Length: 123
Image 1 (cartoon, rainbow, N blue to C red):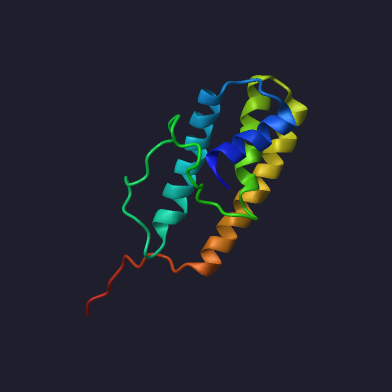
Image 2 (cartoon, rainbow, N blue to C red):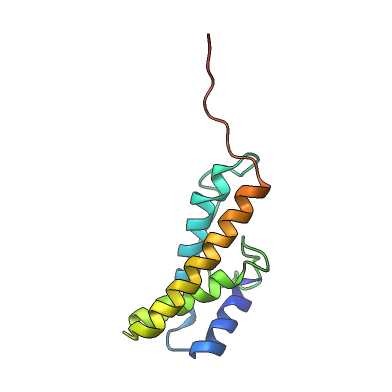
């Protein structure tokens, strides 16, 4: 899924209540969280700090969580939008969907990638 696809899917479900700039910022937030909390904690991962936030020209940039886990981005955008609209019922629904999708992606990534080995015991 690309940045543009995530924004378009969110707009289909919630409308375009907030501009593209806000959604790019929110996508950057969740992508940074995935990068720091999940990707960088496993062997073969890029160095921390290599990831850059999304800009206007990054519409075709691929997101880290590939399908079927890409829906977590849509749920996150919906959650943030509903929070600002103060629609707490929809916010709670989107937050539960996001949490489930995020956990599902984390579980899959942890099953398929070796964690970093940081400790060495010398006798």
